[in-house]
Length: 159
View 1: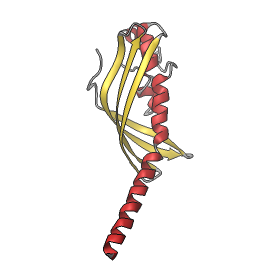
View 2 (view 1 turned 60 degrees about the vertical axis):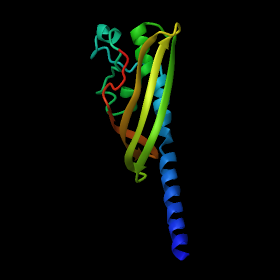
View 3 (view 1 turned 45 degrees about the vertical axis):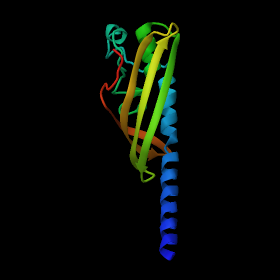
View 4 (view 1 turned 90 degrees about the vertical axis):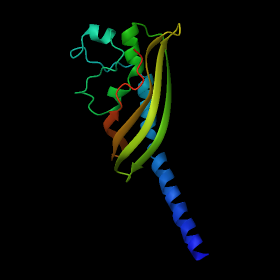
């Protein structure tokens, strides 16, 4: 009976610790969500020509000014506005968090996401489906900062 109590306490502690670990990284998902819907343009026209921007459904960002951060990967609404030439777009986002493993100062987050951006007529402008993402994170001044992002390239990109 004593072994069952100890096992229960250890398991309870592990589940509590794991839950706190997941909850503490929610701010990363909030930042991704706000970036997907952000209309601020992070594309540097000195790097990409207007023609490249208009003819691309890829997320083109100035990686020198936004290295390894969320802005370079998840700026779909602004990219769609560049592609379509109109600000009347409808963006939808689905995120599926898998797991976050960290020691409360550094770690890794895995999730999958899908984004669709359509014009007001319902025509697809850009989007991706089921993209698996691995992000390395670090806690700096009490906030989680993404230090590196790895995505599977184009598993379901609209073309």
